[in-house]
Length: 111
Image 1 (spheres, one colour):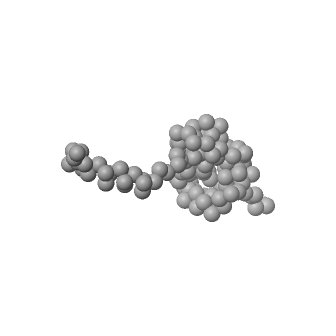
Image 2 (cartoon, rainbow, N blue to C red):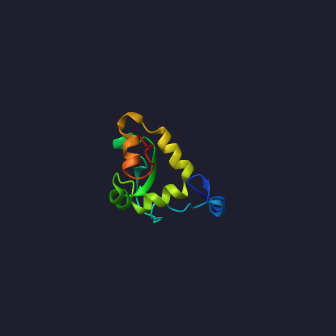
Image 3 (cartoon, rainbow, N blue to C red):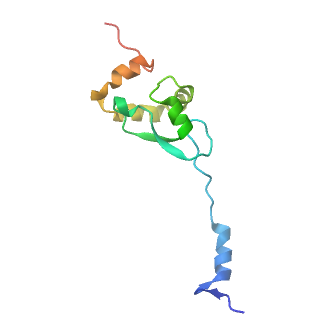
């Protein structure tokens, strides 16, 4: 009996299946569920955000541009370095500072 199939040695092919790594599905950064993911701007695009993370559509829509959404707040507390990188990369001419203050993410200096 031939071990070849379309020019491939099927025994070698079957043996190679032992080394195949099946990676888990990507998870939503906010809720942790395995769903189809969308791009989420930690700093909203409307105030100059340029970098994104991956979250599911329900979480993305629930947060909108809010800085007070519970899952968003939990994420930035758990990933302060990433949050800082997103803020630093944001365009400053789009009202970033005003948004950060209005959402309680930073405190405005006293006048």
